[in-house]
Amino acid sequence: MKTSFVVTLVGLLAAGALQAQTSPAAAPTDPEIAMIAVTADNVDIAAGKLAATKTSNPKVKEFANLMIRDHTSVNKKATDLAKKLNLTPEESDTSRSLKSDGDTTLERFRGLSGAEFDKAYIDNEVTYHESVAKVVDDTLIPNAKNAELKSLLESARPIFASHLKHAKEVQSSLH
Image 1: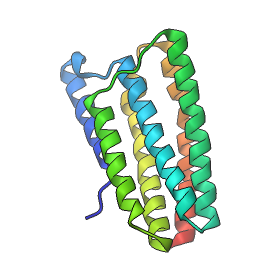
Image 2: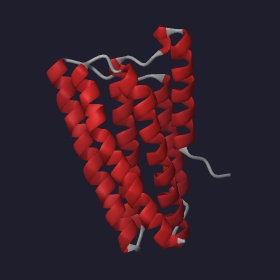
Image 3: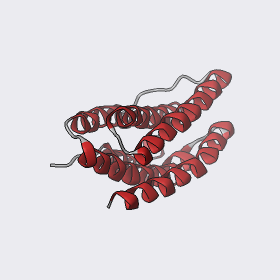
Image 4: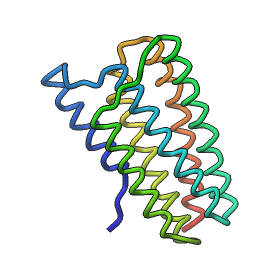
């Protein structure tokens, strides 16, 4: 059975957003938002690193290296901002589940090779970036209280959109 950490990301954050509508205490805090963002980046960096070593497809390798570079850059900006604001990211059920499900996805990817790996990785990246854009728009940005954190999330949004477009282009070349 195909599993994906993206399903958990969307499910957990959607549940949190629904709870937030009835209970403001259920909305993620800035420290939790920071950890969710960093964890999501780290999961995608790890997948990119695996893809860069496993694939022999130049388009998939290029995309994987782009994910490593861009998500590392966003994480550096987030880390620098957290230090500036004296904000310590806090784990939440969402960030812990993201990490766990990311590890499960990586383990599944390790068992694949060739075109099967490339397809699974890119298909996951398309779904992942669609989901991340929705979560950033619907949950993280609206709940961020600090203006600089909100601005960082807003500035990352076009990066996710360009990743999605690129992933779909690679995906269509694989089919």
